[in-house]
Image 1 (cartoon, rainbow, N blue to C red):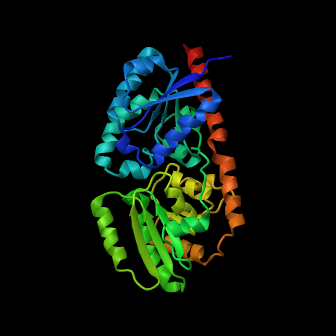
Image 2: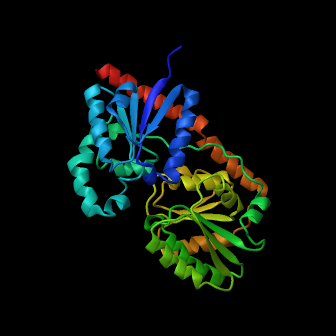
Length: 352
């Protein structure tokens, strides 16, 4: 029986992988065990760790230690793959582009050209990466998820303090300009004005203090049938109460390479509104994901439709959950990652 494949994950420091990327990498590492793949995770990579691994998987860019570790890979004859995790998407590159673009062209791009494979999580991300890399170098594999034990919906609504007759819109992510929370806060007053239904926006997350405080001031002026609650960051098991309790999840991002919170909402059976700047045009299939442009006008229209739609029954929510699990659980997706690692390693050995 062949020995397990030893894969080293080289990751950003903990402070820069809070939230979705940490959840994804932890789940991926656990899911790969079933496919004879043993993962070691580190953000402080050493030359010895590189030499001991069969294959190295770099997660993210803009980390100077990763450049050094890729040089070690080349010197040791070790195959490596890289996942940019959306950090090379157009919006991300333009944000502080005066600093990122020169560094990318001087160092990062050349280093990544030596990768045995560069992984995109969707066709949309691959389309962006083709301007920088040989298409033959690119592979597309979605992220996956572990299957959570979900709370009962009414109990979850009580625990998070929701009122029975309120329509609850959930934002669960980092409070960052890229995530478009300001668009959501500016769209909802018009939705509330046009609908008699009481609307409650629940914001689960934290971020830049100035950005958050400015938006909190906006929501503090809301009255009548519209209100907002700010919970701060909740990344552990408690987040599932909010995902299950919500009537609608909204992530109006300007850029996402995957959007794990969207998948988590679907696992909770909750319908989603997101934007065309996410990859869910190609990922959604028949899942309840509505898309709009990342601007206030089209988001307002999408929210009006979402608030006016019939409330999904528990059976409909169960169907959404089952479909998301079938397509994205790590027992399925992990098999594709394990096969990709072995293909890359075999091709590397044949070339050397």
